[in-house]
Structure formats: structure tokens, C-alpha cells
Image (cartoon, rainbow, N blue to C red):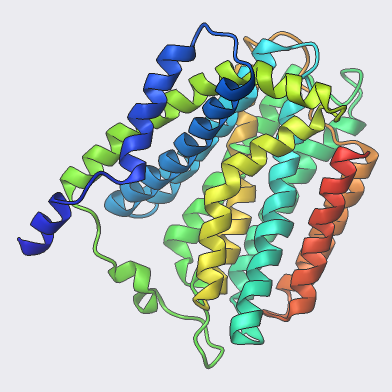
Length: 372
């Protein structure tokens, strides 16, 4: 009772205040034309709403347990990603036909190189040569590679539609294949072979499910979970709405700066993946590199496996083509990322060299996004 009453006397935390604040800002700016300081304030509130949504999704996920917890978190992030993409595509269909491709590809580059590379560097700097479970990590990497090739590379080589575009039947198959692979992966990770995705013990042997401290973590109460569920829904509505309000300002900024439209996709991916980035770095600092790898590969897999099906459904109402095929430079970066990631995963242990290579590949992606 004491701990509960102490918890109840705390002042509202930022993640409690931000969702209703974002809803108020949305109501005040829904039909307004944003410029200057107001656009900057809305952008800050939008980022805060994204962080709050992911936080509340994690609380609900802890309460319902696996595998439903992972699904709730992935669906919440996907709603945010799809909402941002669709809002921008609706506002400017003539210039955003490749926005979905650019955002998903940016998410892959950020997760597979940024989150993974930084996590390796943090873990090695603090704990030296660091081991992880290569079986689970290899399965996750294979899933990411399969989905990336089917959805982002294959459209360049089909002939039913001109350009890097799937036909309706091909897009439906890609969406279904994405859902199947993602669903089987979640089942494998959380039910059938959960031990493959748990941290490695100091003696180099894989931990068992009972050794995972997260298994014994005290779940939130029903009341806390219900409040977080309500705030999660408010956050998701606010994110999608604020994205629509902010989209003209984002496009104007990119245009005035003389940057390619692909930079918009990079901005969206950075905003969406910020919570995962911070969580992965914290886990690596605690010596739980396997958790960081799970976050990196799991985020990449969700970004493809759930976003592509959602956009396939949204394309029914969207005007204009849905360009998914990557350009030559992007294909080279994707192939290099998957090749280096495979060499990183196979040994089951890493040094700072692997982390540095992934970070350099991310830097190359960012430079080529701004200056293709």
C-alpha cells in the first residue's frame, strides 16, 4: 500500500502530460497555416507525442505479456509510421510517391547500422569483447533480408507496371508475404524458440527463459495499464493529426534548403526510431547486447513487415503510384548492410571494429541522402 500511495502522490510525468497537450495543440492548429515559431513548437510536440505513444505502448505490452506485448508495441509504432507517411502523401501526392520507400529504407539503415553499430560500440567500450546469441540474431537478420528483397528490390525487376512499381496483384502478394514472415518471426521469438533471443551468460552459454530478469519484472497494475492504453490512443490520434498539420512546413523546409525529397523519409524514420535507439543504447550499457540486437532487427522487421501491408491497403484510396523499388545507390547500401550484418552475427561475439563499420555505413547513407 505504501508503494502504491507513494506512486499516486507523484506529480504527473511528462508522458502523462504530453498526450492531452498534443491533442489540445492539434485542435488549435488543425486548420491553421503554420510558419516560423509555431511550426517549430508543433514539431516539438509531435516528437513528444511519438515518444509518449511508444512509452505507453511498452507499459501495455508489459501488462498483457508475450506475444501480445510485442504485437501491441509494433502496431503502435507502425500506426505512427503509416500515419506520417499517408499524411504527407495526401498533402502532396505529386512529390511523395516514393516517400514510403524512402521511409522504410531509412528505417532499415538506421536500425541495422545506427542502432546496431552504436549498441556494439557502447557495449564493447564498457564490457570489452561481447557475446550474444547468434541463432536468434541470424534468424532475425534472414527475415529482414528476405522482406527487404521482396518488397524494396524486386519491384525494379517486374514488368507488369512501368517503373519501380508493383502491380495490384504483386503488391497484394508482397503485403501478404510480409505479414506471414513477420507473424512467424514473432511466434518464433516469443513462444516457440524464445531462448534463442535471450542474452548470453558470462560463460558463453545461452540464457534460459527463467534467467531473463525481464521475465520477473513486476508488471503494471490493471489501472496503470488502462490509463496507458487511453493515453496511447490519444497519442496516436495526435501524432497522425499533427503530422498532417506539420507536413506543409516539413516539405517547405526541405524545399527551401535544396534537399532531396528522400530527406523527408529520413526525418520520419529518425523521429519514429528515437525511442528504440535510446532503449538499445541503455541495454548495451548494461551489458545486454542481445536486447539491443533484438530491438535493432525487430524494429527493421516491423518497419517492413507491418508498414508495407498497411500502405498496400492505403494505396486503394491514395492517388498516384506507390513506388517501392530502390535506386542503384540504395541497393548497394542495402547489400553492403546485409553483408556486413551477416559477418557481424555469424561469430556470436563482437569488437568495436564491427560497430565502427556499421556506423560508417549509416554515415554514408546520411551523406548520400543529402547529396545523392
